[in-house]
Length: 212
Picture 1 (tube, one colour):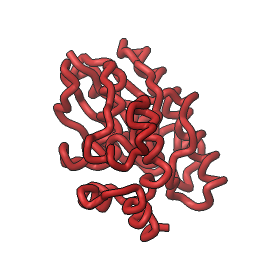
Picture 2 (tube, one colour):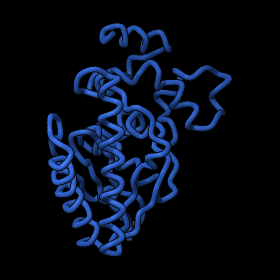
Picture 3 (cartoon, rainbow, N blue to C red):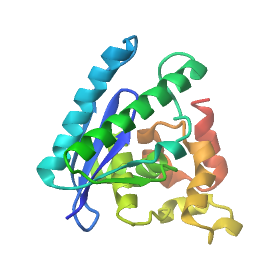
Picture 4 (cartoon, rainbow, N blue to C red):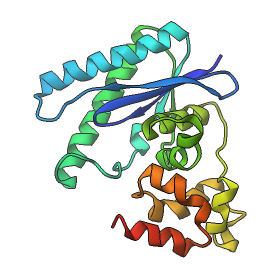
């Protein structure tokens, strides 16, 4: 009957509920703050956030789809301080969240499905934030849920003119990878409101320079 999916972040758990056809029913964000907190405080803060998330799964009687932490790379734009310190903080938080989610899900009989996290935020930015009128993290959670249900995400036709001819027939992940390096830092609203004016990859690069 569908799934609950979650995008793990340093300050929130963004979630989406999908029906059995992969359509979004609703979504939201469970916010928290672990910056400057002790390890015991972090355990308590994250534990309460996870309790809310698993509660949603129990209420809807749906399994949870989440990113495979072993495949997760550094998140772009880690917002708190120096990137090197952030990476250690973020990976600690991600692993702690994963452990708490798996533990509580097992305790309450909630299934957990792991998926590759590749390009979920970018796909959410390019395809869904305007259509669903939601925050980018919720859009990423939606993509994670669809991936867990076996749906594929094709590159929207409007962006295909930015793909070199030799890559037009390549796997859809490779197409998104081609856009990732130049589009990841552009604010979502700016990218989605300007994409119709793009004629070449150079147009997108010109937009990127504004945020370099």
